[in-house]
Image (tube, rainbow, N blue to C red; front, side, top):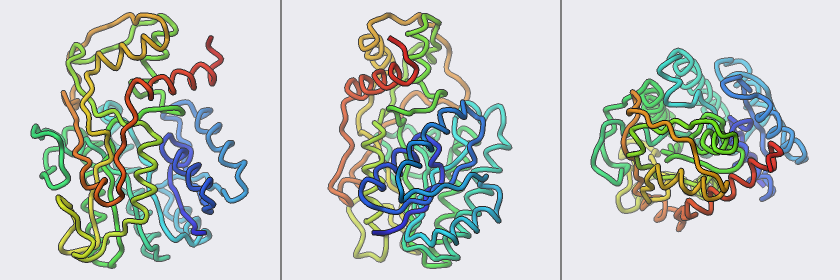
Length: 335
C-alpha cells in the first residue's frame, strides 16, 4: 500500500482523512503544530486515537518550521501529500491576520518545496469556498473568477491556489486544490457554528445568530468530505485526456480546483432548529447583524467532483446534526 503525508492530522478534517486511509491499509505520516487556536486537548485526543494504528507516525512541529517540514517529508518518502493544516477561521482572521500569512503562505510554501524535493505523485491541498468572495452567481462553479476575497483567510487560500498552479507548471507536479463548503460533524472545531450552537443550547446560554438568521450554507458532512478527498487522490490531473465537463483543469499545468460540497443551500435557522430538535431544547437566540467578512450564502456546484470520482456528498443535514450531537454528548459526558 501507499504512504500519505497529511498535514493537520490533529485537526478536524485531517484526523478523519487519516483514519479513513489507515482503515484502507495506507501508511500515514501525520504532521501538526497543535496550536492553541482552540482547546489543544481535543487535538491531543484525535492524535491519541490515530496513534493506536501501527501504520501511523506523527511529527509535532509548525508549518513555518521549514527544516522540520523537510525532514518529516524526507523521512516518510510519501507517494502523496495532502496539505490540510492551516490557520483556519474567517472571523479570527480579522483579529490576527499575521497568523494566516505565517501558516497559510509561508507554511504552504514549505510543504510545496518538500513535495517537489521527494517528488510526490500527487499534491492535494485545501482551499475554501470563501475564495469565491463577493461572487453572487450560484451555485459556485470552479470556472468562475475568484478575485474578490473578503477576508485575509480567503486571500491566503486563493494565494495558495496560485502558488500551487505555478509549482504544477514549473515542476510538472500534479496538484489538486479542493474548495470546502461549511464542513461539520463529529470531532469538529469548537469555533464552528454547529459546535457553538450545540454547546450553547445544552448549557442554556445565548447563541449568536448573524444576519438575523438570513444566511444559507452548503453544509457538508465530514465523512462525505473525506470520501471526496480519498477519491480525488486517484483522480490525478494531467493532460487534456483527464479533463471533464466544466473542469477547471489548467491548460498550462497538471492542476485543477475541485469543489467539495453537498450542493444544497440550507437556511441557518433551519440548521439551528435541527439542533434544537436533536437536543430537545430551544436555543436562547441572540440575533446579530452580518459580521465583516461573512457572506449571506454559499452553494457548491459539485458536478466536477462527481464526474471525476462518481461520487457526490449527500448526507442530509438533520442526519449529520444528529451524529454530531450524539458525539458531543458522549465526548463531554452531557446527558
